[in-house]
Image (cartoon, rainbow, N blue to C red; front, side, top):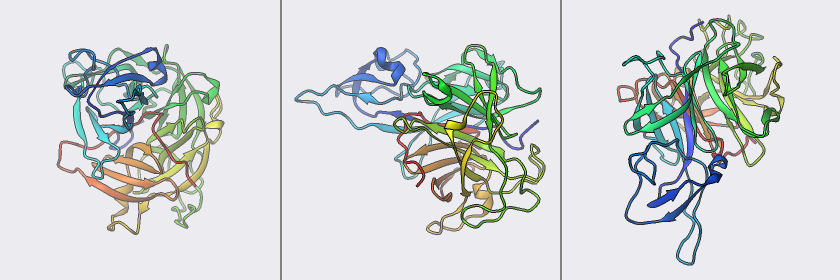
Length: 369
Protein backbone atom coordinates (compact mmCIF):
# COMPACT_ATOMS: atom_id res chain seq x y z
CA UNK A 1 0.00 0.00 0.00
CA UNK A 2 1.34 3.40 -0.97
CA UNK A 3 0.00 6.61 0.40
CA UNK A 4 -0.20 9.17 -2.38
CA UNK A 5 2.29 12.02 -2.21
CA UNK A 6 3.09 11.12 1.33
CA UNK A 7 6.18 10.40 3.31
CA UNK A 8 5.40 11.79 6.72
CA UNK A 9 6.64 13.48 10.01
CA UNK A 10 7.85 16.62 12.18
CA UNK A 11 9.08 17.24 15.64
CA UNK A 12 8.72 19.66 18.54
CA UNK A 13 11.50 19.80 21.10
CA UNK A 14 12.00 21.62 24.35
CA UNK A 15 15.43 23.25 24.45
CA UNK A 16 17.19 26.31 25.76
CA UNK A 17 18.92 29.22 24.02
CA UNK A 18 21.39 30.59 26.52
CA UNK A 19 25.10 31.26 26.58
CA UNK A 20 25.98 28.33 28.74
CA UNK A 21 28.27 25.43 29.34
CA UNK A 22 26.29 22.33 30.31
CA UNK A 23 27.04 18.86 31.46
CA UNK A 24 24.65 15.95 31.18
CA UNK A 25 23.77 14.30 34.44
CA UNK A 26 22.16 10.99 35.35
CA UNK A 27 18.79 12.68 35.20
CA UNK A 28 19.04 12.94 31.40
CA UNK A 29 16.67 10.00 31.20
CA UNK A 30 14.13 12.27 32.85
CA UNK A 31 14.89 15.11 30.46
CA UNK A 32 16.94 17.23 32.89
CA UNK A 33 20.39 18.74 32.40
CA UNK A 34 22.46 20.98 34.65
CA UNK A 35 23.97 24.16 33.27
CA UNK A 36 26.06 26.99 34.57
CA UNK A 37 25.75 30.33 32.79
CA UNK A 38 28.80 31.44 30.86
CA UNK A 39 29.09 34.41 28.56
CA UNK A 40 31.91 33.33 26.29
CA UNK A 41 30.41 30.45 24.28
CA UNK A 42 27.12 29.24 22.88
CA UNK A 43 27.10 25.64 21.58
CA UNK A 44 25.99 25.33 17.97
CA UNK A 45 23.11 23.07 17.00
CA UNK A 46 24.19 19.45 16.88
CA UNK A 47 27.20 19.84 19.16
CA UNK A 48 27.67 18.62 22.67
CA UNK A 49 28.32 21.73 24.85
CA UNK A 50 31.04 19.76 26.65
CA UNK A 51 32.88 18.85 23.44
CA UNK A 52 32.50 20.94 20.31
CA UNK A 53 33.18 17.95 18.05
CA UNK A 54 31.13 15.27 19.77
CA UNK A 55 27.74 14.21 18.40
CA UNK A 56 24.84 13.96 20.78
CA UNK A 57 21.20 13.05 20.94
CA UNK A 58 19.22 16.27 21.24
CA UNK A 59 18.81 17.04 24.92
CA UNK A 60 15.47 18.80 24.68
CA UNK A 61 13.99 18.20 28.08
CA UNK A 62 13.50 20.89 30.72
CA UNK A 63 16.87 22.39 31.65
CA UNK A 64 17.46 23.40 35.26
CA UNK A 65 19.96 26.17 35.95
CA UNK A 66 21.19 26.01 39.54
CA UNK A 67 20.38 29.35 41.07
CA UNK A 68 22.85 31.33 43.16
CA UNK A 69 22.71 34.91 44.35
CA UNK A 70 24.08 35.97 40.95
CA UNK A 71 22.11 33.53 38.79
CA UNK A 72 18.46 33.34 37.72
CA UNK A 73 17.00 30.26 35.98
CA UNK A 74 16.84 30.85 32.25
CA UNK A 75 13.52 30.51 30.40
CA UNK A 76 12.78 27.21 28.66
CA UNK A 77 12.42 27.28 24.88
CA UNK A 78 10.35 24.91 22.79
CA UNK A 79 11.44 23.73 19.37
CA UNK A 80 9.72 21.73 16.66
CA UNK A 81 11.58 19.35 14.40
CA UNK A 82 10.17 18.85 10.90
CA UNK A 83 11.53 17.07 7.88
CA UNK A 84 11.14 16.42 4.20
CA UNK A 85 11.83 13.01 2.69
CA UNK A 86 15.54 13.53 3.27
CA UNK A 87 16.30 16.67 5.33
CA UNK A 88 15.73 17.63 8.98
CA UNK A 89 14.81 21.17 10.12
CA UNK A 90 14.50 22.91 13.49
CA UNK A 91 11.86 25.58 14.22
CA UNK A 92 11.45 27.95 17.17
CA UNK A 93 7.88 27.48 18.45
CA UNK A 94 7.68 31.15 19.45
CA UNK A 95 8.76 32.46 16.04
CA UNK A 96 5.64 34.12 14.51
CA UNK A 97 6.85 33.16 11.01
CA UNK A 98 7.98 29.68 12.08
CA UNK A 99 11.06 29.95 9.87
CA UNK A 100 12.77 26.53 9.51
CA UNK A 101 16.50 26.26 10.21
CA UNK A 102 18.12 23.54 8.14
CA UNK A 103 20.00 20.98 10.25
CA UNK A 104 21.10 18.45 7.64
CA UNK A 105 20.33 15.40 5.55
CA UNK A 106 19.54 11.92 6.90
CA UNK A 107 22.54 9.80 5.98
CA UNK A 108 20.37 6.68 5.62
CA UNK A 109 18.11 8.08 2.90
CA UNK A 110 18.65 7.69 -0.82
CA UNK A 111 22.17 8.46 -1.87
CA UNK A 112 25.41 6.81 -0.77
CA UNK A 113 23.80 3.44 -0.22
CA UNK A 114 21.05 4.70 2.06
CA UNK A 115 18.79 1.91 3.27
CA UNK A 116 15.60 4.01 3.12
CA UNK A 117 14.02 5.64 0.09
CA UNK A 118 12.53 8.39 2.27
CA UNK A 119 11.99 9.26 5.93
CA UNK A 120 8.28 9.15 6.72
CA UNK A 121 8.21 10.52 10.27
CA UNK A 122 10.08 11.18 13.48
CA UNK A 123 9.22 10.94 17.16
CA UNK A 124 10.86 12.83 20.04
CA UNK A 125 10.83 11.65 23.64
CA UNK A 126 10.94 13.75 26.81
CA UNK A 127 14.74 13.82 26.84
CA UNK A 128 15.01 14.90 23.23
CA UNK A 129 15.91 11.51 21.77
CA UNK A 130 14.87 11.31 18.12
CA UNK A 131 13.62 8.08 16.57
CA UNK A 132 12.95 8.05 12.83
CA UNK A 133 10.53 5.91 10.83
CA UNK A 134 10.87 4.92 7.18
CA UNK A 135 7.79 2.95 6.07
CA UNK A 136 8.69 -0.46 7.53
CA UNK A 137 11.76 0.23 9.67
CA UNK A 138 12.87 2.43 12.55
CA UNK A 139 16.16 4.13 13.39
CA UNK A 140 16.62 4.29 17.15
CA UNK A 141 19.79 6.32 17.48
CA UNK A 142 19.38 9.43 15.34
CA UNK A 143 22.18 11.91 16.02
CA UNK A 144 23.06 15.33 14.64
CA UNK A 145 26.70 15.47 13.56
CA UNK A 146 27.70 18.73 11.92
CA UNK A 147 25.46 19.17 8.90
CA UNK A 148 24.50 15.50 8.73
CA UNK A 149 21.80 13.55 10.54
CA UNK A 150 23.23 10.12 11.34
CA UNK A 151 20.50 7.49 11.50
CA UNK A 152 22.31 4.59 13.12
CA UNK A 153 21.30 0.94 12.59
CA UNK A 154 17.90 0.15 11.08
CA UNK A 155 15.49 -2.12 12.97
CA UNK A 156 12.73 -3.75 10.86
CA UNK A 157 9.16 -3.33 12.12
CA UNK A 158 7.89 -6.88 12.44
CA UNK A 159 4.38 -8.23 12.83
CA UNK A 160 2.58 -5.92 10.40
CA UNK A 161 0.54 -7.11 7.44
CA UNK A 162 2.83 -7.45 4.43
CA UNK A 163 2.91 -4.20 2.46
CA UNK A 164 1.76 -2.02 5.33
CA UNK A 165 3.66 1.25 5.58
CA UNK A 166 3.95 3.52 8.63
CA UNK A 167 3.71 7.27 8.18
CA UNK A 168 3.11 8.63 11.67
CA UNK A 169 5.09 8.30 14.89
CA UNK A 170 5.13 9.69 18.41
CA UNK A 171 6.10 8.65 21.92
CA UNK A 172 3.35 7.82 24.39
CA UNK A 173 4.28 9.35 27.78
CA UNK A 174 5.20 7.15 30.73
CA UNK A 175 2.13 5.62 32.33
CA UNK A 176 0.31 5.09 29.04
CA UNK A 177 -0.05 1.38 28.17
CA UNK A 178 0.89 0.56 31.75
CA UNK A 179 4.56 1.24 31.19
CA UNK A 180 6.88 3.22 33.43
CA UNK A 181 8.81 4.18 30.29
CA UNK A 182 7.72 6.06 27.19
CA UNK A 183 6.42 3.85 24.37
CA UNK A 184 6.98 4.44 20.67
CA UNK A 185 3.69 4.50 18.75
CA UNK A 186 3.47 4.28 14.97
CA UNK A 187 0.43 4.58 12.72
CA UNK A 188 -0.42 3.69 9.13
CA UNK A 189 -2.83 5.11 6.58
CA UNK A 190 -5.24 2.25 7.35
CA UNK A 191 -6.03 4.16 10.53
CA UNK A 192 -4.31 1.72 12.89
CA UNK A 193 -1.99 2.52 15.81
CA UNK A 194 0.75 0.17 16.97
CA UNK A 195 3.09 0.05 19.97
CA UNK A 196 6.71 -0.78 19.09
CA UNK A 197 9.16 -2.88 21.07
CA UNK A 198 12.36 -0.84 20.76
CA UNK A 199 14.56 -3.90 21.23
CA UNK A 200 13.08 -6.23 18.62
CA UNK A 201 11.01 -3.94 16.40
CA UNK A 202 7.96 -6.12 17.09
CA UNK A 203 4.67 -4.23 16.91
CA UNK A 204 1.27 -4.80 18.51
CA UNK A 205 -1.93 -3.01 17.57
CA UNK A 206 -3.28 -0.69 20.29
CA UNK A 207 -6.31 0.87 18.60
CA UNK A 208 -7.87 2.50 15.55
CA UNK A 209 -9.22 5.97 14.71
CA UNK A 210 -12.87 4.94 14.28
CA UNK A 211 -15.19 6.01 11.47
CA UNK A 212 -16.28 9.18 9.66
CA UNK A 213 -19.49 10.78 11.04
CA UNK A 214 -22.17 12.65 9.11
CA UNK A 215 -20.85 16.03 10.22
CA UNK A 216 -18.24 17.62 12.48
CA UNK A 217 -18.98 19.64 15.66
CA UNK A 218 -18.86 22.87 13.63
CA UNK A 219 -21.65 21.78 11.28
CA UNK A 220 -19.38 20.86 8.36
CA UNK A 221 -20.80 17.82 6.57
CA UNK A 222 -18.75 14.96 5.14
CA UNK A 223 -19.42 13.48 1.68
CA UNK A 224 -22.12 10.82 1.96
CA UNK A 225 -19.90 8.26 0.26
CA UNK A 226 -17.30 8.66 3.02
CA UNK A 227 -19.63 8.55 6.02
CA UNK A 228 -19.22 5.40 8.10
CA UNK A 229 -15.90 4.54 6.47
CA UNK A 230 -12.73 4.19 8.53
CA UNK A 231 -10.67 7.33 9.09
CA UNK A 232 -7.31 7.14 7.32
CA UNK A 233 -4.22 8.65 8.89
CA UNK A 234 -3.50 11.65 6.71
CA UNK A 235 -0.17 12.43 8.11
CA UNK A 236 0.80 12.35 11.74
CA UNK A 237 0.01 12.08 15.42
CA UNK A 238 1.48 13.74 18.50
CA UNK A 239 1.20 12.78 22.20
CA UNK A 240 2.29 14.98 25.12
CA UNK A 241 2.70 14.38 28.85
CA UNK A 242 0.68 17.46 29.92
CA UNK A 243 1.99 17.36 33.50
CA UNK A 244 0.92 13.77 34.04
CA UNK A 245 -2.44 13.96 32.21
CA UNK A 246 -1.42 12.87 28.69
CA UNK A 247 -3.17 14.21 25.61
CA UNK A 248 -2.88 13.25 21.95
CA UNK A 249 -3.91 14.47 18.50
CA UNK A 250 -3.87 13.18 14.92
CA UNK A 251 -4.66 14.51 11.46
CA UNK A 252 -6.96 12.15 9.57
CA UNK A 253 -8.76 12.16 6.23
CA UNK A 254 -12.12 10.89 5.02
CA UNK A 255 -12.04 8.72 1.90
CA UNK A 256 -14.57 6.65 -0.08
CA UNK A 257 -12.53 3.42 -0.16
CA UNK A 258 -10.07 3.23 2.74
CA UNK A 259 -7.23 2.37 2.87
CA UNK A 260 -7.02 3.64 -0.72
CA UNK A 261 -5.95 7.30 -0.91
CA UNK A 262 -7.94 7.87 -4.12
CA UNK A 263 -10.59 10.63 -4.09
CA UNK A 264 -10.09 11.55 -0.44
CA UNK A 265 -11.31 14.94 0.78
CA UNK A 266 -8.94 17.83 0.09
CA UNK A 267 -9.07 19.03 3.71
CA UNK A 268 -7.92 16.96 6.70
CA UNK A 269 -9.72 16.65 10.02
CA UNK A 270 -8.26 16.97 13.52
CA UNK A 271 -9.08 14.43 16.22
CA UNK A 272 -8.14 14.12 19.88
CA UNK A 273 -6.94 10.69 21.00
CA UNK A 274 -8.00 9.15 24.31
CA UNK A 275 -4.70 7.73 25.53
CA UNK A 276 -6.43 5.81 28.32
CA UNK A 277 -8.00 3.57 25.66
CA UNK A 278 -4.73 2.40 24.13
CA UNK A 279 -4.31 -1.30 24.87
CA UNK A 280 -2.11 -3.94 23.27
CA UNK A 281 -4.00 -6.32 21.01
CA UNK A 282 -7.20 -4.33 20.75
CA UNK A 283 -8.64 -2.86 17.55
CA UNK A 284 -11.25 -0.60 19.13
CA UNK A 285 -11.77 3.10 18.47
CA UNK A 286 -9.40 5.28 20.54
CA UNK A 287 -10.65 8.65 19.26
CA UNK A 288 -11.83 10.79 22.16
CA UNK A 289 -13.52 13.37 19.96
CA UNK A 290 -13.54 14.92 16.53
CA UNK A 291 -12.41 18.53 16.84
CA UNK A 292 -13.44 19.33 13.29
CA UNK A 293 -12.56 19.49 9.64
CA UNK A 294 -9.57 21.81 9.31
CA UNK A 295 -10.87 25.00 7.68
CA UNK A 296 -9.74 28.60 7.44
CA UNK A 297 -10.18 30.79 10.50
CA UNK A 298 -12.27 33.87 9.71
CA UNK A 299 -9.48 36.05 11.14
CA UNK A 300 -7.06 34.82 8.45
CA UNK A 301 -6.98 35.60 4.79
CA UNK A 302 -9.11 33.08 2.92
CA UNK A 303 -7.38 29.88 1.85
CA UNK A 304 -8.63 26.98 -0.29
CA UNK A 305 -9.50 23.69 1.39
CA UNK A 306 -6.45 22.13 -0.22
CA UNK A 307 -4.29 24.32 2.04
CA UNK A 308 -5.40 22.15 4.96
CA UNK A 309 -4.94 18.74 3.40
CA UNK A 310 -2.03 16.29 3.32
CA UNK A 311 -0.86 17.48 6.75
CA UNK A 312 1.90 14.92 7.02
CA UNK A 313 3.56 16.33 10.13
CA UNK A 314 2.05 17.81 13.29
CA UNK A 315 3.33 19.15 16.57
CA UNK A 316 1.55 20.78 19.49
CA UNK A 317 2.33 23.82 21.59
CA UNK A 318 0.07 25.43 24.17
CA UNK A 319 -3.45 25.61 22.65
CA UNK A 320 -2.52 25.00 19.03
CA UNK A 321 -1.56 22.23 16.66
CA UNK A 322 1.08 23.09 14.08
CA UNK A 323 0.69 21.37 10.74
CA UNK A 324 3.39 20.74 8.14
CA UNK A 325 1.95 19.83 4.77
CA UNK A 326 3.20 18.03 1.71
CA UNK A 327 2.47 21.27 -0.12
CA UNK A 328 5.25 23.00 1.90
CA UNK A 329 2.78 24.93 4.07
CA UNK A 330 2.99 25.52 7.83
CA UNK A 331 -0.35 26.07 9.55
CA UNK A 332 -1.57 26.96 13.04
CA UNK A 333 -4.66 24.96 14.01
CA UNK A 334 -6.86 25.55 17.04
CA UNK A 335 -7.04 22.43 19.20
CA UNK A 336 -10.59 23.44 20.16
CA UNK A 337 -12.39 23.80 16.82
CA UNK A 338 -9.78 22.99 14.13
CA UNK A 339 -9.92 26.50 12.64
CA UNK A 340 -6.59 27.26 10.97
CA UNK A 341 -4.35 29.90 9.47
CA UNK A 342 -1.54 29.46 6.97
CA UNK A 343 1.57 30.84 8.68
CA UNK A 344 4.14 30.19 5.97
CA UNK A 345 4.10 29.08 2.35
CA UNK A 346 7.53 27.64 1.62
CA UNK A 347 6.79 26.58 -1.94
CA UNK A 348 9.91 26.99 -4.03
CA UNK A 349 12.15 27.27 -0.97
CA UNK A 350 14.65 24.82 0.49
CA UNK A 351 11.71 22.84 1.92
CA UNK A 352 10.52 20.54 -0.85
CA UNK A 353 7.37 19.24 0.83
CA UNK A 354 7.14 18.17 4.47
CA UNK A 355 7.00 14.46 5.28
CA UNK A 356 6.75 14.57 9.08
CA UNK A 357 7.37 16.41 12.30
CA UNK A 358 7.84 15.91 16.01
CA UNK A 359 8.11 17.62 19.37
CA UNK A 360 9.19 16.51 22.81
CA UNK A 361 6.51 14.89 24.94
CA UNK A 362 7.55 17.47 27.57
CA UNK A 363 6.42 20.43 25.42
CA UNK A 364 3.80 22.63 27.16
CA UNK A 365 0.24 22.03 25.97
CA UNK A 366 -3.22 23.30 26.84
CA UNK A 367 -5.85 20.54 26.49
CA UNK A 368 -8.87 21.31 24.29
CA UNK A 369 -11.61 23.14 26.11
